Image (cartoon, rainbow, N blue to C red; front, side):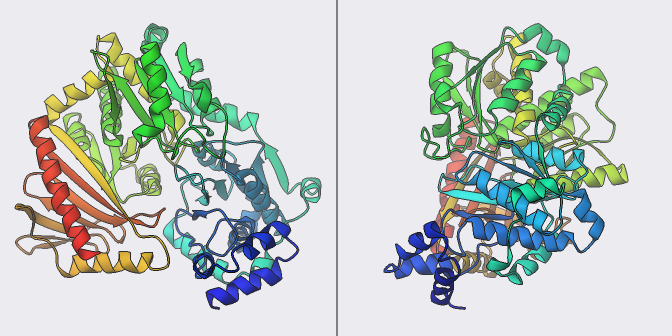
Length: 575
């Protein structure tokens, strides 16, 4: 159907839903808005659904949630025993998250699929843990992660606790297309409870998850010594991290944890920040104010679903420095490897895993400790797949995984980035350096002096609207049709095309890449730097990653600016 036909159909089908009907009537004279809401269905991929809240097929609303859940139930019911194992459902503090979670649970119940629904908001990593802990077949979490307040989302996990793999997501997408919106009808809640199809969960699972996280402490004796000396500022940014992060920090022994009061409680409008993204220094502004006031050693914040963590630290002169995801990842990686090597607990077949767009400094650190460094595509589900693979084959033992977008994990019972786990490790790493009379900033400088000065810059090109996907496809094709030979005179030594699955060097030699096919281009540069271009998996934009390395901070900064300017100019010339 055309977008106009879809619009008219919704007016007919949902006329008894006053809120939806009135919202649709309010845009009756806005053809552009009608087109944007109804020209397509909200896309369902390996990250599930994500979009702006509102009425329409291209929006997040109760009907898109019900339809997707109906398709998931059909997929699960292909094998009857899977329905008995059930689906765990969690949600964060965003608008409509609790409603969407309950509707998803009751649609599953209507199809005979058992649903475990958390009684209140919980972080994404606890959902991942719970799928494995309860031996469920799948999990759902209602969240749009760090997106702006007008967004919400619907992420699906499979039985390993990782996000839905691409081949399963494709099968569910086919079922979504075969499902009518009116077909997805929830069961009455009391009926679901009476039939034992709906189970509310909470404290018991919380306790198991927290115990799992606390076991990941590297040096409990260090915390016992330094726990009352380190001063920490934490902000949950109005999200789900408030209770579990504070509980874990307290129970492992950190005594001086100060929470930003204005950002402590859940707030679906995220009224104190423009975007609740801890990667953005502006999101931590209130934490920085409290840090300066208290003279705290470290300030960190988690996003609404508590899978990402951002950090700000004071140097020896009291100046505040925001750390990037790459810098945090390298500090945690070095701490884990160095402490475990000193304790004699570092496995001989240890492996760390990072995304291809994360810093190569991690590879240098791993080499120093005899730890393998494995690259995967962007998306923590690929790190989760490597953990599963290592456990199956015994080839490696997973010790740490991270993405430059502030996602970290050091355990194997959770299969997604874990802001609770990371918060504990950040505090522990800060305590490690404080014992030596150093700050986290000092620790980072020591790593640079040892391994070289690595730096990175990420630029996003927003391509929203009906034509956005076409523009992204055209841009990527243009770069494939005419690959750049250099960036401002810095030669490209090899091109990795992850869609074709090949790496071609300047001599013309072609080798096969190990990673799955993905629409990503990666340019290796002669000076050790690299540039990568990829469409975002969660937002309508193209992301450009530029990385540089040299023996000095000044030289790296100059090279990064030079490469970034050249790369941005190339992108703009293709758009």
